[in-house]
Length: 454
Ligand SMILES: Cc1cc2nc3c(=O)[nH]c(=O)nc-3n(C[C@H](O)[C@H](O)[C@H](O)COP(=O)(O)OP(=O)(O)OC[C@H]3O[C@@H](n4cnc5c(N)ncnc54)[C@H](O)[C@@H]3O)c2cc1C
Image 1 (cartoon, rainbow, N blue to C red):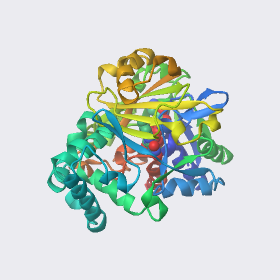
Image 2: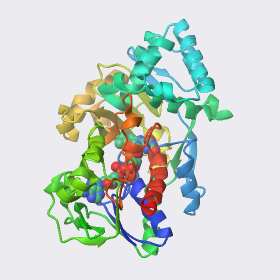
Image 3: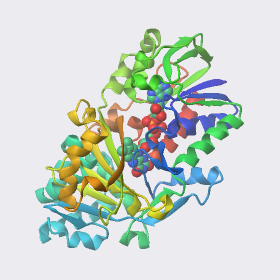
Image 4: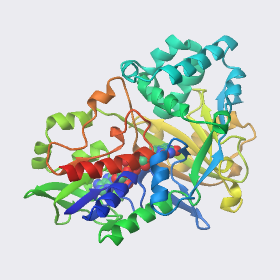
């Protein structure tokens, strides 16, 4: 069969690789002039590549680790100790080992013990996820661990992922995180190790694209799909011209070339783009019920400022910002995780934010945003000065984080749409786990199976 895959993020590339291996002719269309979607890298100079958005792997991320092995890169992932801190009440508190919880000053000693006991109980006894789907994380935590634990620890942690929607997040999301953490064994219990592919995520994308091309397929970057329509029993994809990404994300703003025929189509684009791509007759075939489900998911945008600094900013890799007066939610100092020597001695810090669409910070350029962040950076490190910044890159991902509210699981649209031969697979269907490249690998394989089963 001739199969069109829309989107060359991890999910689309893995699906294309699987479909090629099953003997089909696959063509991948990608809007951006590069591979990898949300995990894409940029050249930060001197031939070094870094993800546009901070990325690491957990030891529980077995699907992506298996993919590296399958593609002949068994030693690609380096596992390194991570270091985590909370910025609260005007100072950094280490949160690296379980003992740090017992010493965590923003919480009273009783609250520390209560929190530790509740986490252990959930990890040991909470094997049925159903009860956690019906309650928000906030209510569960306040009931089981107390208000303090929410205010000082879990509220800030969830704000680091879901911004101002933290209060509405379903407990099942946190349940899944804590249960996965339970599978961590040995030395890792004392100090967590995280993974990072030795030469960034880029070699993985290259290997997947080469596998598709070796099977006779094509991976077309800077070549978005502008429209998707029914053509006979199959589909027509109308591609847009190179450079169309400069017109934004909505494919209706792209000029559409004549259609290319395919037997089947897999869309791995975000929900809103999926609907915008459908021509009216195909949208009617997909149907209101399915589209209502896709529209029901709210996405928060990631606003990520990558700074090259002339020195170290903090001693930690990952700092959760628990002080709501600061205008960002996290500081991720990549070169406190991967040694600066890997980058010729250069140092990189990501300043992270998750924001609702339309938020005023999303409209700023890198300089203006840095100006807005400067006082906050100085609150964390009083010595910080703008002179430390050698370069800045700003990236915005509108569909970065699906907001997982109570009842989310019941609303997820199935991979197979009501239109025969058309499959949708994107981060909104990763549940209850936190979306991530590992689950995009799993979803890509599931999507390929769903497409062939149709
Ligand atoms: C700030 C941030 C930090 C993250 N940190 C981590 C981490 O530490 N570890 C981890 O594992 N994961 C992390 N993730 C998540 C991870 O990157 C994603 O879950 C994963 O990459 C999603 O892959 P995907 O293929 O499903 O979606 P996407 O990567 O979104 O792929 C969709 C693709 O469709 C393309 N597209 C859009 N419109 C069109 C069109 N009209 N035609 C053709 N193509 C189109 C897009 O350009 C994109 O390439 C992070 C994400 C963000 C935003």
